[in-house]
Length: 362
Image (cartoon, rainbow, N blue to C red):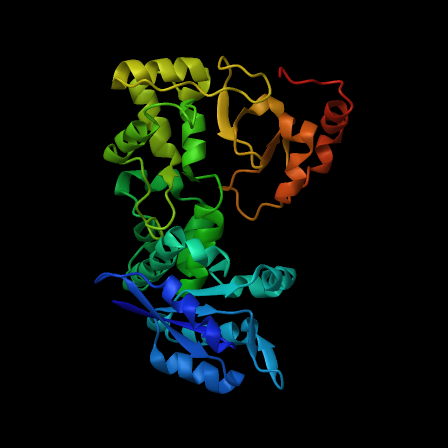
């Protein structure tokens, strides 16, 4: 069983250690550690050689308070010289405390993930993700000295390396510690549409309505046909290879899925796989006879490229797809609730939509 530590300044918060724990031989046992002064606490954590560290944002006491940031920095600095002891570090705090953390941009790279304490009250998914972080780090450490380790981390077959060998992906091999690789994979491969897709984007590419019949059967077929991503952190975040999905769809339907309407794609899937899937509708046109391809980053509904605007999104890597907002979310203004901003170059379309010069089909 993997061993983890949860550090908090308040003794009564030890209950959160139990909420982060998971049972089984390959489970995670999280123990509570009350915070002390920074240097002694760092020594205690390092001496225990944990597989997982969770920190509340506010540590120390009223006489000598400090945040989780300097503690995480000390732990990360140590990992640069002892990569085999590197482990995931997450932030677990109340919502208001996390707001203060997010304003401290320089601290973001120290933590793999952030969870609110409120989230942990219903934590089955979060426990899976925490355990996946632990297992993912173990895989990074195990394969650290392998040639082209980036491809091992992502569980790629030899023939398909060229599909994924973007310069920024290959540069993972030049990073100096597992936590540096982990954070790039989590932020730019797992979290963003690009070489991997989440399930909503998979269904959009297939033209399938999320709430229709046989969706689970469809996804099981994709699993059996090895479209699913099985590399590091895959146990906590379900993702699918974009290039495998494209090849799979073309082989099944004899056409590139991107050249078929949602109705045509679903007709092919139902016929070839003996399913009763329903086609997805365009939120703007309220029609299935459209070239849906991905989901809006605001409402997560399938959209076609011609009825979107670009979100402001300073991309770090070329393999990450830009964020897009559907015209419907521009019309309603709901994208603002998701913290999205529209790219300045889209002002003309935005003005016409908001003035009613361009109207949806609903």
